[in-house]
Image (cartoon, rainbow, N blue to C red; front, side, top):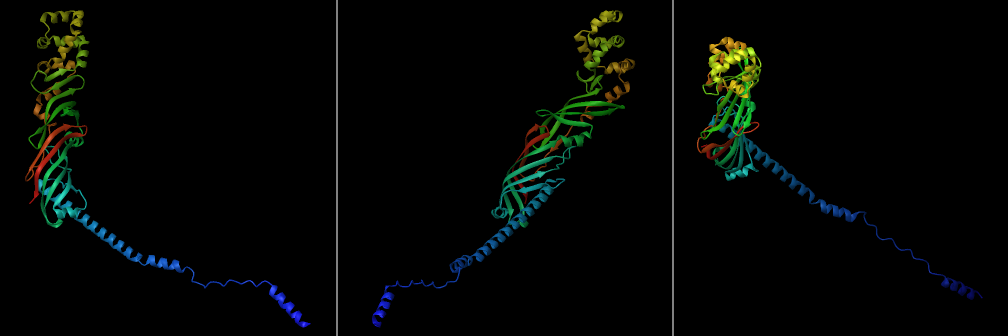
Length: 381
């Protein structure tokens, strides 16, 4: 009776579902194993690359500093030699172009050199600026400390005579130079004569003097005595003492003064007025007005040179408002004495060898310009 019971219990056990199997956990691995290995592989070459870059950067900096030092030294040496050879009052500014400089020096040839000379001596003009650019320069020497000279194959530049410097040097705050047109300069200022301020007007023509010079010749000059009269030094028909159109017009309106002038036979003859017309005008006011009111009479009156009349009839000049002492002082001023105040010249220094000359001379708003050309210039030995 027990046996069936056991079998029944076993049968129940065999009918039960098998127990579930719990999967076994994989073997534990260190966290980030592959990441650390990759980082280590990447970092193994990084210090070497940094060192190479640091060495390369340091070497480049040293070479650049050496190149710039050699450049500055060469520029200073060239400036001193130019000052001595060209006998300049101030050392010029030298700028060597191209980079690097040491490779140009090794090839004994410079790409370009710019030279600026701020102060070049000139006749009565001490402040003159010269700028030049040289190309195709062959160096004689092996290093910055052993450069003996240089050969400039071609050079071009400009010379500037500035009006600001000319006003300061020549005018002394009394005369101002300005441009009047192509190749022409005008000077306007004041001149003290016999205690009177006389306005001075002068026109000068700028030209090239020789191969390396600039000169100005004064062609037109006049001294204005207020708005009363104008004096032009010289002996030509346009020179002498002449009434201005404004003062001549006022004079024709004052019967007493115009009669005093017509009463002088020499003045009446220069005016081209016949004696009979003069006598009739002196007796009749209407005839006087008709004579002096004609445009031709007014034009002829401004053309009469009053120098002789002023010296022969001083009272007449006083009635006209002209100071005899001023007129006497003006007649003693020679034309060369006055024109000397406005004359100036400039001469380029002669190079030791080669050809250096001025080309085109023009007048601009800031001053007088001239082109400079040079070939085969040898500097140093």
